Length: 282
Image 1 (cartoon, rainbow, N blue to C red):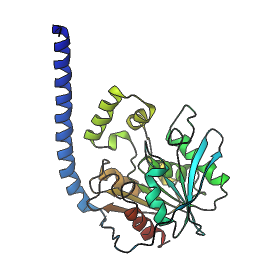
Image 2 (cartoon, rainbow, N blue to C red; image 1 turned 30 degrees about the vertical axis):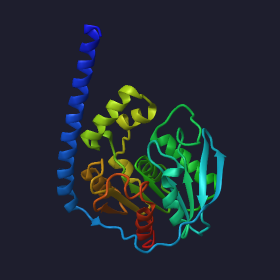
Image 3 (tube, rainbow, N blue to C red; image 1 turned 45 degrees about the vertical axis):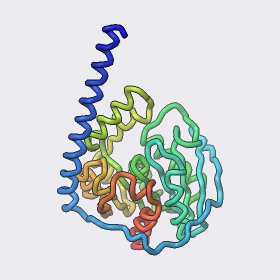
Image 4 (cartoon, rainbow, N blue to C red; image 1 turned 120 degrees about the vertical axis):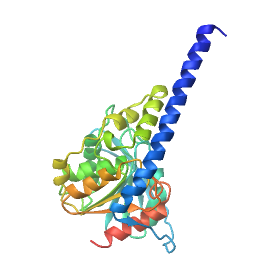
C-alpha cells in the first residue's frame, strides 16, 4: 500500500473515532439532561394490557393531487376520520400497526408524504408543501374535521397544516416534533451529518435545515392539540414544552421510558392508547 493511501486511511479512522466519541459523549449528556427535564412535564405511561383486535386494511389506493400522486391505505369504517402521517424516511408501513388498532374506532387514512413510499417525487420537499399536500388529500377524500396524528416529520406536518389551514383539523396529535434543527440533540445532528457525507439526499438535508416553526405559527393553531414526546427523545423536551405553551388549546405528555419512535412506529399498541386517551376527551 502506498504511503499516501495509508495516511488517508489513518485520517479517516481518526475522524470516525472522533465522531464516535462525540456521539457517545453527547448521548450520555442527553440521557442525563432528559431524565432531569422530564420531571418538569406531564410524565405518563401507556397501559396496553387491554386492547381490541387489530383490523386489516380495507383499501390501498392512490389519489392525484396538484403536484403529487399520493399513496394511501385505509383501515376501518368509523364515523370519525383520522389521518396518520409518518416520519422522515418512513411509509404507510411505519404506522400500519397503529392503524390496525385505531381502525376499531375511526376510519384511518395512512398517507405517504411526497418523496416517500409509493408516493411520487415532484422534485422538491419541505413542510409547507407536505402540509399543502395533506390538505389537498383531505379535500379529495371529502373528510370533515378529521383528527390528524403525526410522528416526527409527520408531527411537524400536522402542526404546519393546522397553522396554515386552521379550519381543517378537528384535533391534532403531534409526536416527536421540533420547531428547528437547533432543538434536536447534538449527537443526532452529528449522526445525520456523518451519514450525509456518504449518502447525501434531500431527506437528510431537510433534517439539517428545517423546520422553522415560529411562535406566531403556533399561535395560529386553533384545533385542540396534544404535544407528545418520549422521555428519551432526540428532540429537546424544552422545545416540546415551548410548543405546548405557544399553542392556545393544547396539552402535553412525555411518555415515560420512551425514545423517539418506541411508542409510535415501533409499537402501534401504545399509539392506540395514546390517541384514544386524547381523542376520547374531546
